[in-house]
Image (cartoon, rainbow, N blue to C red; front, side, top):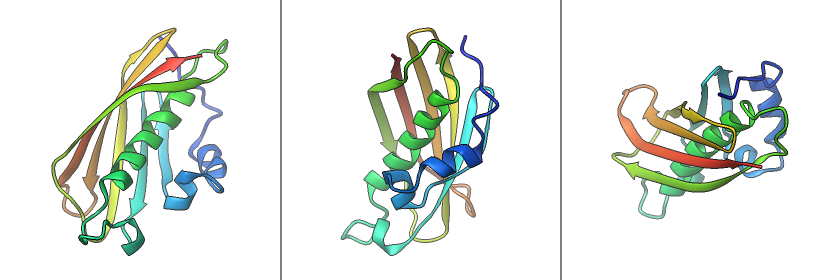
Length: 139
């Protein structure tokens, strides 16, 4: 089982985001530890679809970023990196304002693959917006 690398803190990941999609969207990592990572994203108009609801791609990007950063924080010392080989999302609701947050949890931390589940919720209401599963291949 891969272990969390404690030098990979929320500040480390937040420092990598500017100039890349997580930074563009405004994703902020708030906690990381053995087998988990948590992040948040304030809802704003430019993250909405033309129909006025939160764009599904916004939700997927938040969850995928959380799972990807979590995978990075748990890579074996011999790994050169990782790549996503599968992701799936079930969208159960939306948000029109406030902050959405994600909790990514390890399901499998093997030598060659990682599997992460993530739940995206609205911070104020606690309403589940999406369920997500991501599988990464360790390189």
